[in-house]
Length: 102
Length: 477
Image 1 (spheres, each protein chain N blue to C red):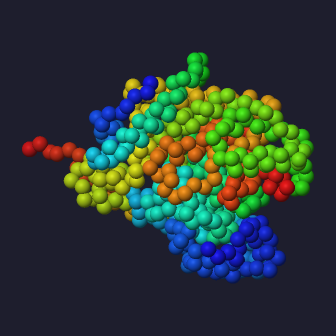
Image 2: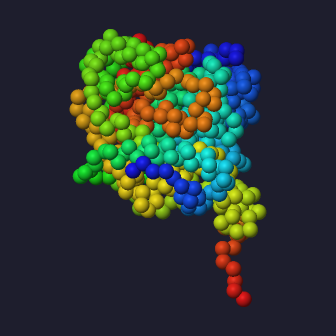
Image 3: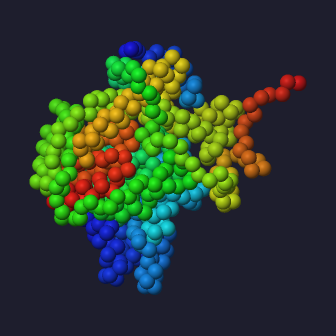
C-alpha cells in the first residue's frame, strides 16, 4: 500500500481542508507525508478479520443525564458574541456567499 | 539559572506550611512572581502571568487562613497549559490563529481547582494546539529544558513541566493526547499523571483528538498529583464522556511494601534502540519495584508495534475535524473581515496555522477521504480494538504495567524539527495508554548522562488511585 503522494493530491487535500499552500510548502510537506504514510501503512499488515471497530477507550455504553434544558450564562453568551470577528444583531457576519442575479 | 526559593518544594508541604501559619500565601506569591520575572525570559515556560490577580487572590487566601475558612488548596499557585480556558484571559493554545482570543468561560478542571482555593498563576507554553513532543512548535517560541538550556523540555506540555521543575509554580496542569503530560515530565524531571480517559472533564480544553485527550497534573511528587487529581476528577454534565471513576480504598500506606503487586514487564517495550542510559535507569527502577516486594511478570502486548501507526491515523483524523472550527468566523480574525469572499476568508485565516498543524490536518483529511477511509481509519479503529484486548488480557495476570516513557532523554533543540517522523517516533511508548484509555503516570527514576529519566506505570482503566498508590510507594523508596 506504499505510495507516493502527488502534488495534485496534496492540492486536493489542501482545498478540502481550506488550507492554501504555496509551492514551497507543498514541496516541503510532500516528503514528510510520503514518510508518514509509509509508516502508517504498516497497519495493512495487521490481520483484523472479524474485529469490530471501536471509537474510543472510554467507558462502554451511553452517558445519560436528566432531560432538562440548560443554557449558558448570559455573560458567557455575551463574551462569545463579542469575540466574533464581525457581528450584526448578535450573529456572526461573514462575506456574502451568493450574489443576486439582476 | 539560579535556584528557586521554592524549588522541589511540594504542593503538600507548601499547604502544610500555610496551615501551620509558618508561611503566608501572599509572601509565597510575591516571591514566586519575582522569581518568574527573573527567569521566564530565558526559560519561556509561561506565555502569560497574571501578576495583579495573583496578588489579590493571595491576599484573600491570607485572610482565609486567618479566619479559619481556608479550603483544601487555598493559596496554591497553579500553572495552566494554554489550551485550557480561564475566563477573561487570552487563551491561544500557542497558535497565532487564536491570538487575542479572550476565553468566555473557565475549563471545568481549572474551575474545580479555583473552587478549592487554588490560584491560577499564569498560562504555560506548549506545542501549537498540543501537536508536538518538544514545545518547539509553539508559535511564540520554544521553552528551554529546565536544567539544560540547549535542550527541549519535551512536549507538548513543556511549559508546564519546565515551570514545575524550575520551581516557578507549586503544580501545573497539562493535557495528554499521546504522551503530552508524561513525556515532558520524564524529560524535564517531574511527576506527570494522565488519568483514565473521562476521569477529568474536557470542558474548556481546546480539543485536539477528543477520544484521546485527558487533562492531568504535572507535579513535584505523586502525592501532589493525587491532591490535584482528587479535586478535578468526576462527572461533569458539560462533558458527555466524563465519568465518575470508582474510588478504591488505598491498598497501601506510604512506606509499605509492594508485596503482592504483580508488575507486568511487556517485552515489546524493551527493544534494542532505546538509549542505553534510559534502559539502565528503567531496569534499576524495576529492581527497586522487586525489592519493594513486587513480583515482576514478563508479559506480551502483542499488537504494540501497531500502536504508533494506529495513533497517527486516529489522532490526525480527529484533530483535522476538531480544527475545522478555526475558520475565521467564530474566533477573532481580521483576515475574515478583510476577505472578499467567505472561501478566501477561511483560507487566509487558516494560513495562520503553523507547519505541524497543517501537516496533521492534511494527514487527517487524507485518512478520512473516500478511497482511504477503509484502509486507514477503519483499520486503525480495529487495531485500537486489538490494543484494548491486549491490555484486558494482561490485567488477568498483572496489576500494573511498567515501561519506559520515552526511548531517549531530552534532545537538543532543533534536532528533530526537520524530521516529523522521528519526532512522532519519540511518542512510541506513550500513545497506547491513550488509545486504550488506561491511567498512566511518569515518575522520575534516574538519569542518563545527567538528564532525567521517567518510569511509566499503567493500571487498568478506573484504577487511578491504585496506580497512584503504587507510584507513591516507588517514589518514596
